Length: 207
Ligand SMILES: [Zn+2]
Ligand SMILES: [Zn+2]
Image (cartoon, rainbow, N blue to C red; front, side):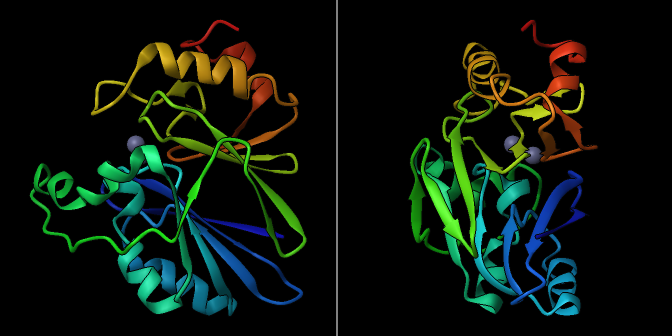
């Protein structure tokens, strides 16, 4: 399994493209913007993208979903508590003077602790509300994709629609900081980190 990471759009979102050498099957996590850049990476690696997984429904994580789904034909996934955010992509865009198309339909909704079997690996869904009601993290072995819930030395903002400071702290303490310390964290923005490092150094959380 190879994890490719690219930074897309004005919000500098990390979009991750996971691929498998053996058979080229792949997954996109958070196609936030710049579909050309994402599709170029996919083309160069000859990935056959099966799933588009969203950590949450904010514009900077779903802005290129329409185009990437159209080209790859991949199935889209989201937690249902972020469906209204997702469906209001156009309204989210207007706030930034961006004109966006309606996002495509979501094919499947996550539930907390769902396990998705993909190409011989298990993707565990961890519902971590707080940054948004339907924020989730994806755990694959000792790797965690944390979206905008946990950052390197930071946490997601909670002043946007449906955000809750109490909930994000609870999510991180109870659902993320209980994972192995050596778990590598790939966040929605910024540099990667580990659970153990954040437990000790993250200034926003007292574990
Ligand atoms: Zn966000
Ligand atoms: Zn974001």
